[in-house]
Image 1: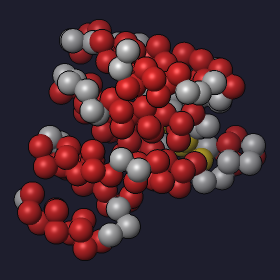
Image 2: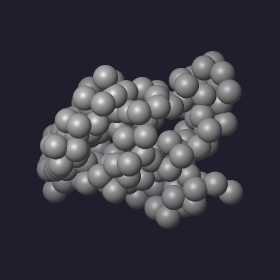
Image 3: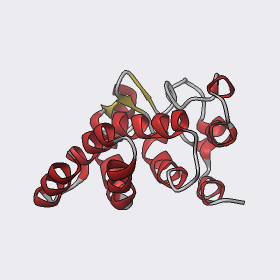
Length: 158
């Protein structure tokens, strides 16, 4: 059992709305497939695109998935899986609540996502210094409240 599995088990995914129009019950199996994939082909049908967000519009599952994505970034992942998780975080911190979520009383899902990413901010800084610095800094630009730290890291990494 790994940290991602444990984090995923904390939530009742079936009770959450997903961007595909179904419940979020399938989200844990998508994470598992992504974590187990060793080739890009093995990820087909298991991405988080269209589930946590659709065209930068966020759904109820989004902020709940952020800690699982952060946990996944602690794992040894193929570059394409790591990139998928980082890109998804970027979508989540730059998006906004879908109109159906606003109507359901969740008007600030992006703020919830940003807050959740802040809890793992050093994972994103680690990615910035050792991996995909461009996407990582794009994420950090939206989540790091310490602009001095952000600018210092960005200058040092470039």
